[in-house]
Structure formats: C-alpha cells, structure tokens
Image (tube, rainbow, N blue to C red):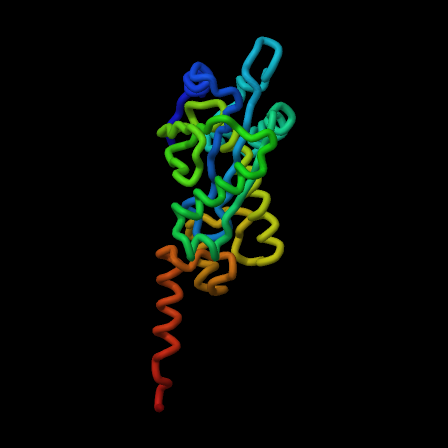
Length: 223
C-alpha cells in the first residue's frame, strides 16, 4: 500500500488554470471476483481556515479502518459541494472488460453531479470519453484530497452493497470479503457454485466454470 499525506497540490495546479469546480474520481472493487465496480465523483469546496476541518483525517480509504471510513464518509457527505456515485454490474464487467466498465461507472458518477465540474482529478485512469480537462495521478487517492474523498465514498458505498448481497446470497461471505479473492471465497465458490453476482470472465471464476463444464461432459461409469 502506498502511504502519503494528501495535499491540495493537484487541485491548486488546476485552479491556477482558471478551473473553478474540480471533481476527484476513484473506484472500488476493480479487482474483486464478484459484485459491481463502484465509482464516485466528489467536488470539495476550496480550503479556508474555517472550512473542511475534517481534512486532517482524510486519507485514501485503504489507509483507514472501517470506523474511520464511516466517519469520513459522513464528513465528506456533509462538506462536499456535490457527490455522484455510479456503478457497473458484474454482467457489464464481463461484457466490456474491467477497464471499460470502470470508466463507465465513473461516467455514471459524473452524470450525477450538480453542479457539473470544470475539471477532473483521477486516480491513475483517464476518461477519453469525457471532454473536460483532467489530470491522472499515480497513487492519486493517497496524494489528492479530492480523490481521497472519492475513494472513501466509493469504498463505503460498495461495502454496503456487498453486505446487502450477503443477505440475498448467503453462504458466500460477501459481507466479510466484499467479493475479493480469499480462501474462504474460493471455498464457497467450490461449494455453492457461481452466482449471478460473480464476474465470469475473471480467471478464478472462469476456471471453475470450465471445470464444471468438463465434469458434466464426463461419461457416467458403465455407460
């Protein structure tokens, strides 16, 4: 995990170019075996001594505990100018590939913003489908306040979705591993089979489906 203190440096570069409202974007769930990929777009107000006091605790969501993320989620929701959330479902991920599906989720998040931003700050990816000025930053969720805020909204939102899925599809352990590849998730797949929330093009799931097809084609003993 890349650790750093977020700053306003990237935002200040774009503000200096005359851009007024900047949206930070990030995603959660890109590498999971199951569930949607969720993206968030967050427009924070420009800093001042009496605004955004919570920023001392704002970090990349991966650097925070569950309790810290929930607290920061509430703080971002209260302080942001606008927040948008979008997602791409497992079936869309299989149809488009994870990279295109992630960009689609980000476009859907942007479409939820009101007001619309003048420019974008993104963690690593770029959105060629969007004509707004944008800056892609490696480890952006650890370096930019706006992207860090988006990472928290995306992560908390997706975790809640997976907890809901755990109630609808008991036995897979979605509330615990959030759809990522763990030993318990692999064991549940072997025991229960592939659900409608699993990404069938992802290698571990595809391999299980292939094994099931091969097994079903074996002749019965004595046939």
